[in-house]
Amino acid sequence: MPVRLRSNRPEERRLRLSETALHWICLGLVCLGTLSVAVIQRGQLHLDDGEALEALNQATMQGGAIMSRVSMSVLYSALAMLAVPVYARLLTAAMDRKENRKLALLCLTGCALASEAPYDWAMGGQWFDMGVQNPVWGLLLAGLMLAFFQEKQSAGLGSKILIACGAAAWALLLRVYTGPVLIILCALMALVKNRRIVLAGGAVVSLLHFPAPLGMLLVPLYDEQSPAAKYWLFALLYPAHLLVCGMLGLLMAG
Image 1 (cartoon, rainbow, N blue to C red):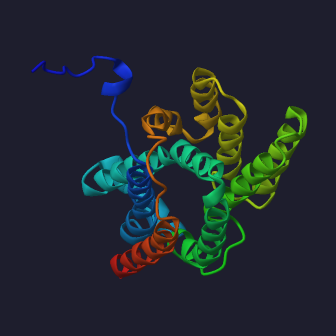
Image 2 (tube, one colour; image 1 turned 180 degrees about the vertical axis):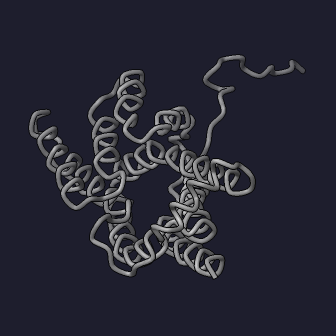
């Protein structure tokens, strides 16, 4: 009996990650960013206090454990930025599936509302802060923009670009964290079909949140044939992790 050899074609040997796997990776990266602010900066280093900030500046000059914590905080915050372009790709894929469109928007709406107070508390120590809004609002605005693109496919490119600019402007006006960049990335991935242009353009756009451009390296790994993730699960886990990290920071702050 002849033996069937495996294909040596690069496209069949390339690493692929399912939609669910990428959601878990992004959630892990986001958790690192929350730990950086809520636990290390606010809990251990007490950066909410102006006097503590001055003491921190003096301590970092001497090195030691505090300098190690500062370095860890910077590293965690940088790693969290890698999730921005990946979330843009996942949202674009979710909105491409008509059967998942309404569910995705519903989960984003619920997650944005449920995360607002926990986000303000974990990141700033207050339950209500209009200075910055949680990044899920950016995903929601991007999702509504992508839904318009899908429903109005006959609309011209100029009209779609105007809608994208309007959504980014709203994110900027509402001070949604990473919102404008996330929206522009989603528009780029939805409107441009050339993958090389998308990767290059996405890297340039996401430079505003460096090292987010490195997250573009994960985008081609997305397996377009993988089943949809459980959106409701991740919509629950995001506010839950904010509450947990906020509590840890509170305990460490004493």
